[in-house]
Length: 272
Length: 296
Image 1 (cartoon, rainbow over the protein chains, first blue to last red):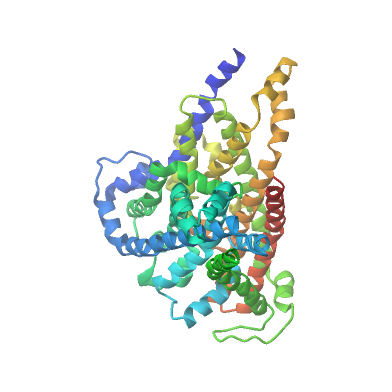
Image 2 (cartoon, rainbow over the protein chains, first blue to last red):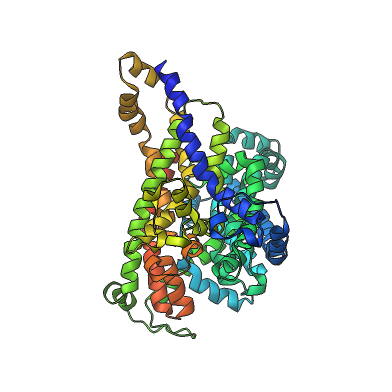
C-alpha cells in the first residue's frame, strides 16, 4: 500500500522533469513561428499568434546549402565507417591474429582522445593532400575517427556469435569472406542500423572538425548555425527556426529508431 | 595450410584501419608532442627544440591557462555530480514500472540526439542575464511566476559563470546516465530486495545498503565517461557564450592560441595536457573493462 502510494506521487517530479526537458523545445519551435512584431521581450513566453512558416522557409533558404554539405559528408562517412567497423569487428572477434588483443584497445583509445591533440598535424596533412577546406577531407576524417566506435560495436556483437557457427561453416568449405558475407552480415543487420544511425548523429552534430577543416562555402549545418546565432544581426525567431532545422534530421532518426540509438549510446561506454 | 592463408587475408583486411589509426591517432599525437616541445610561432613550422618551455610558461606565466584550469574543475564537478544525481533520480523514478515509462524514458534521452550547437543556441536565449526592464528568458519566466529568488546572471555571474554552462550540459547528458542506471537497476535481482523487506528493512534502508552499493560500478563508469567529456567541452561553451575569457576552457584556448594567434608550440602544449588528463581517466578504464571481459 505504502509502495503504490509512493508510485502515485512519482508523477509529480516526473511532470517537473518533463517541463525541464521540454522548455528548450517549446522555446525553439514556438519562437520559430513568431512574426517580427512578436519577439519583443514581454511576449517571449507567449504562444505565437499564428503558426507562420515564413521563418522556417527563410531559415531553410539560408541553411539549405549547409544542410546539403552536411548530408554529403555524413552519409558517405556513416556508410563507409560502418563497413570498415564491421570488417574489423569480424576479424578481431573471429580471426584473431597475433597481437589482436593489444591492437584492439589501442584502436579503442582513439575514440576518447580530445581531438585538439591531433588538430595541428591534421590541418598540415590535409593541406598537403589538397583536402583542406573541402568536403572529401571532412568525410575522410569522420571515417577514420569513426573506426574505434564502429569496430567496438561490431566486435562485441560478433564475439557474441558462437564460434561453432564459424567452425561448422569452415568444415563445409566456406572461406573467410564467404562466412562473413553469407552468415555474419545477414544476422548483423541490426548492428549495422545501430552503427549507421550513431555515426550519422555524431557526424551531423560535429562542430570541431567542420569548423577547422572546411572553408565557408563548405560549412556544415552546425558551423553555419553557430555563425547565424553568433552575431546580433539575425533576429531570434529566425535563429530558433534555424536551430529547429539543424536538429530535425537527428531528432527524426531518434524518434523513429530510438531503440537502435540507445544501443549505440550504450556501446560508447564499452558495455556492448 | 589454407587456414594460414586465410589468417593472412584477415590481417590484410584490417590493416588499412590499423594503419589509419596508427597514423591519425598515434602518429599525430607524436607529431603534436614534437610541436609542443618546439619554438614554433607564426605561420611557418619551426621545430627548434625548446624542451618543456611551452609547458612551463603555461603554468607560471599564463593567466588565461590558470582560468582554464579553474573553469575546468568547476565545470567538471558541477556537470558530473549534477548529471549523475539527475540520472539516478530519474532512473529510480522510472524503475517502479510506472505507466508511461517508455514515454518518459524517450523524453529524457532525446537531448542526446541534438548537437551542442543547437542546445547552446536555445540555452543562450533562456539564460539571458539582462536585468530590470530588459528581463528576459528564464529570468522573465521566474518573475512572472513570482519566483524572483531564482533570478540569476547565469554565465555573466562574476567568477562562477562557467558553472551555468553545466546546466545545458546536464540537460543534454542526464538521459545517458539515466539509461546506464536503469540498466544497472534492472540487473539487481528482485529476490534481494524482497528478502530485505521480509527482514523488516525500510525502502530507504534497502536503497542505501543494497541498491546503491550494487550501482557503484555504473557510477564509476559514468563518472569516467562524463569526466572525460567535460575535459573536452568546446562547442557548448562557444554556442552559449561565444569566446569570452571568463568562460574560457582549455579546448577553446588551444584553438585560439594555435589558429588565431599562431602560437603553435603553446597551443600544442595545451592540447597535450588535455590529452594526458583524458588518458589518466580513460586508460585504466579501458584496461579494467577489457580485462573483465576477458575473464568472463
